[in-house]
Length: 575
Image (cartoon, rainbow, N blue to C red):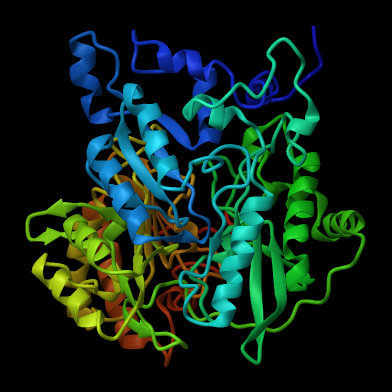
């Protein structure tokens, strides 16, 4: 008998010998395309998830074959900046080992899909050869650290990028398991001896209770959706230089359908720190969560629930005790939006930067729109930077005036326009969902473009095609595409059915509210068409759609995460 009530994942981590488990043995087993259940939890820390093609499940089950297993691999790219050489290397990996596409994520990282087990080590080694890695891209650790999309726009943007990279490096796991398993490194741990805490000076052998996400923003752009994350830094710029950062804590998106004690939460303002304190603050905030977070109930283990339970003042006292100094008072700032400025933009150094709209972050070639080939040719011919944004888009940065028309010509040749077909599409995001995500309850990436085309017909009737309205879709309530901060949020409930959420703030500061459950396509269009038409006719000057639906009485505002499920009056719709 034992009184240890910790969740199963805690025991897996504790017995993993610092994330080794039996991963190496599982990779060597040619009898299956899968790995053990325990190892599938540990490989997340190495940046990869075991998945299968759910479209093929019925056929394979009929033939008494195991599922069509493969792995998703996520490449960690702190602040999202890569070189043309790295882009070409990752593109080659996509063609050689994955499904022929690159996916740009909502957290400035790359994902490969469809990598079979026998190609896993070769893929990881190819990523390493490009001077990138996948360590801590997933798992109960600090994930990829995001920053305002383009570090080349100004000195303040460059400083934000540097802070993000430094935080990432400080909070990176120290285990030698990654090098040992994937890169054929020497054994760095004697299996005959007990694991030692000093192998992980920050995390210890249990790592964190759940994942931890950090971001850095430079106002007035909130492109990183700072209030959606565990830890955030808002640059306070004075006379062109960063004087310090407002710190935010306790944001997070995930929840579970039907369980009101789970909810998304916007981050709280926590204090102000100087630039040279930012990394230390990150470590101390994360280690308090390491020590205080819930290790019994994983649905209650995210940092946002620690803040809900303990209170921000108690948490601040403990962080300041560990820091040895007090944080300053929050300073004034202002955000305009969460979107990317699509098209060409000139930076302070007179270099040009092109933000390309990449629908749902999927880089691929298709008839009349050969995006993958176009970007490879740009990378081969030009010495620019490739910067991933938090909105699944791509910036071709640091372009000279001479190179600008050449890049335009390449894009035109391959059928690529930088712009989206509407303001709604420009502000859209979707998670991968089916067929590879095991958690998906409904379609997302494969369906949202089609739905947007239908909604664009409505926008044309209302005269709103060019208006910026944020719409996001996920196949489950975990919130990877941050749907609860969308003016129109769609969250999968069952195949073809979604919960519709309305009323988030355009600047990312307010969550939306459930308006109707289990809507299919026809009902969704019937709901949104009169609403959008009314918005076009009745909106006040400068009023955003998310604010209008609250003023018009469709939903009540969500003033805090713990009120997300409160004040819901589901729309009564005709069948």
